[in-house]
Amino acid sequence: MRALILAAGRGRRMGGLTNKIPKCYVKLFNKKLIDWQFDSLQDPKIEDYAIVTGYLNQLFHYNVNYFHNSNWKKTNMVRSLLCASNWLKMGTCIISYSDIIFSKSITKQLIESKGDIIITYDPNWLKLWKLRFDNPLDDAETFITNRNFLVKIGSKTKTISDIKGQYMGLLKFTKLGWKIIYDYLMTLSQEKISKMDMTMLLQELLNQNVKINCVKINGNWLEVDSLSDLNVYHNRFDKK
Image 1: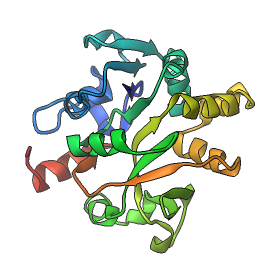
Image 2: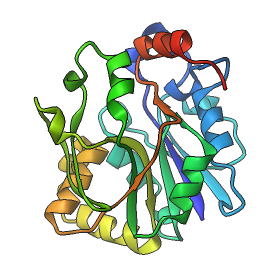
Image 3: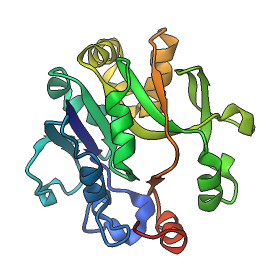
Image 4: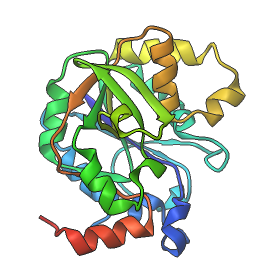
């Protein structure tokens, strides 16, 4: 099993904090976001690691595999994912956004989960989103499941009942799962791929009747998307 961190973006919502460092180098509780991730992804079953870089790629110094999205300014998450395509073809891989932190127990849940394309989600998302946003619906998107399978994701909504959980930005693909995704992406134009984010990809796969398994987690994670998030977390939580 492998682990891949998608870390190509600058993170403009971080303001001046990312003028000279990548977003994942921003610190929360005196620790880089990416270091939080590497700590949580340490597991005996994960044997190899990689990072997709973009903005200020020369600053990365970890002893892992690297893939570079040279067009990071004009592309989205799916394009970064494709940069590591050949690596993903070689076996099961956990994929993580670079702006989340999560516990080792969540990594273990994901490792043990069954399915070819799997995502994690938090059913108790609203409490955290109320801390982060005056109106959680300004940011949250639809997320509907049926048992352990995803039904709908990624649309704007004005109804809390359309949001059964919050997609975390933490996924797992088997070799077959990545083949299904890659084969579908190869039917699309390069322009569409470059504009596609991960939730858009997941919904498009659902439209193709691809099964996506969902793993329910219980807290112990944070998304760090803005200066406001950093301030909220420092005021509300501690390193533990």
